[in-house]
Length: 317
Image (cartoon, rainbow, N blue to C red):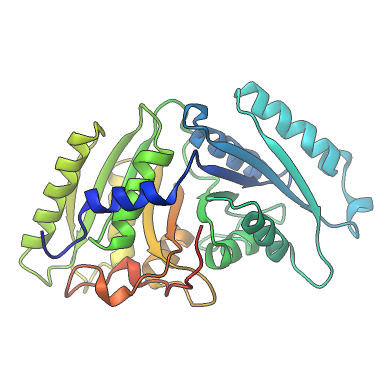
């Protein structure tokens, strides 16, 4: 098979990386959106897979005397403990003081890395409020700097419980293949529907795109994943790639939009992943491949790969 990465190979690679369940964490501050983020995090946890959930809070002692009682760390702990007990999800509570000279973002990212979190769930904004076409400071920083994959929860996103409509966007790259296998083996619920889309810009004859979608279809049938595959054709003179992806998510009423990226760190986010993260109205899941990958080695020739959106840092889960 040429032109894209075989999903069976990606699945074999994934099995070598993960031992036990997925470690999920959600960052909370007592805001309405952090409550929603906590509910989404709980939704992704599967105790049968031996998943773990940690609720993270960064406290600033210089502001404690100005906070209402319900936002004090001890009361937040009780609030989220009650929430998870209702959902029947075991949780660990971790509260840390913001370190001197560091921002809340830096402290949170450091905690998540130390705890070896695989997926960090955050609200798209904090108590300061929401801004259109923009992420809050913490979610934006975590997306760029955290070694963990990132799930960004929007206030405009639909609530999903037993069944979620998931749209996975692929480009045939190694990062996309690994992200898809991570999604279906480590995060997907038993009743979730997973649709797969590739955006075609018309730069090719479409043969590779059709072959890729057939490969995903056969893999999904083999692993009993319910869903469809489709090719989204766009005219790049009128529609950008990220707009095509967001249109597909809207057309399919997706609850969760998922894509994979290669690496993370000091390098700037690529335009596709950055714009989707900032503009998606639904919950967005960015699955990172933090292993070092030679980006020129992967992806469909002649196309801009989402695997190249971030240059790898060489660090691992």
